[in-house]
Length: 236
Image (cartoon, rainbow, N blue to C red; front, side, top):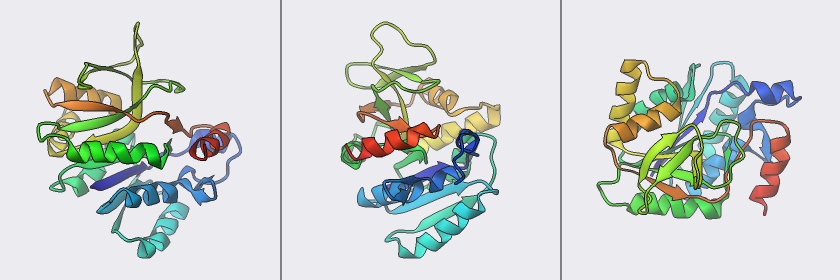
């Protein structure tokens, strides 16, 4: 399995709240969160890890360049400032072409390894007609969650901005995808579609079979107070 990490955001809210490190280098349990994420991926059978950071993140660039020789798999780095996560994914997607199934996540998406490994196995072993598998969570603590509607087979029917009676899941920010999903991404870019949530809707609209996987609790690090919450969670 190949993995991609979107780490190109500015982390402006953390800076405003007194965190002086770039978000990817914020320590979680003694390790920068991007190093922890890379190690989780390697522990889950990564064949390669690709990362995109923005041009201003020189500290992050140096950290990854220094880290790469010690890793058991290739670490591929893209340095480019992009207007959105979807545009960052577009840059990473060029490295994913021809690689089969891959998993993409943002750097501040925090989950436990013991919850993540079964998701990787499920996506790796899913039938050939499954074009993607999105990690979902029933832990709704997001400022603007993307709600997911699934059927009884956990096939995703729709991505919605607003909740409804009986809603169970929101997007966890972890995307298991395949070659047809890159085709949809390129079409979205050509049509000027923006935001990852609109791209996910486009996957369903294109007729791709996208499944959901309940990953349990997932925490996002958007604010300074989230750091302690994330550390407590991964150690629980």
